[in-house]
Image (cartoon, rainbow over all chains, first blue to last red; front, side, top):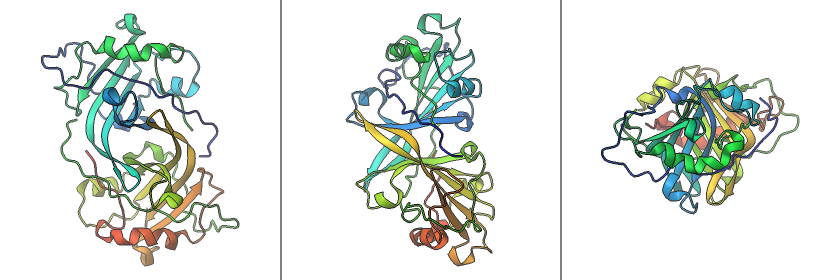
Length: 166
Length: 166
């Protein structure tokens, strides 16, 4: 259980504005993975109002990865994640109480799924985000492109921001 | 996956000062549970330098509970946790980068274990904390009493601060 090495998460944007889009298309749904909070917790971070990303992704993030993607996360490097990799983000409100940031209710569940053929135009990743974790409330209709804009500069890490922390 | 109800974590102290104690006794070890980070993530919080608890428990906390304790956590109320319940805390450094708090290296792994007979004098809970997650570095020799001082006021929640967040 000893700490072997540490790499700070490179903080960046995930998805575009988190306003619910009425009439959103759910055909390309990228659904909320069942029990994703049993997956490996990659890291947590809090994006405060002082962040330039506050409007887009403000909140307390718990980033999880499924078993398909975990070996690649641990390995690091520039190898792409395998198809079937899913990252899910339990995005929460937070409050500041007497010098401590504490976790609050769910704001959204952003999801990104690797399918190198289906999403070839966006680095092999599909994106969606679900308001308050509600599978009836996709946040963005053109989420694949909207989210990819911020992930694109992360190409050397297969368009992801996460790194493995021990 | 919809959010049903929300209760804010009551923030409080966990264990006394996190200085490594040389010559600490490990007989009453309360060891680091293997793979505790596969357990249920109760919540996360960041105790900043502005908290009165900064010296004692400053850092980014991930609080996990094992399967024995999870039903009681979900149920809430005043019923004591069953014997065999373990809470483990993955306590990390953090840094503030451009308005976002990001997770860093491990500072310690505080642990609390329910054994109503063995730890009858401290509400049925035993406590320990391991520097940097190193099983050779217990942080406090008299940890049971030291930690219990801060947990004692939480008697209505069986001496725990955690509540179930959906």
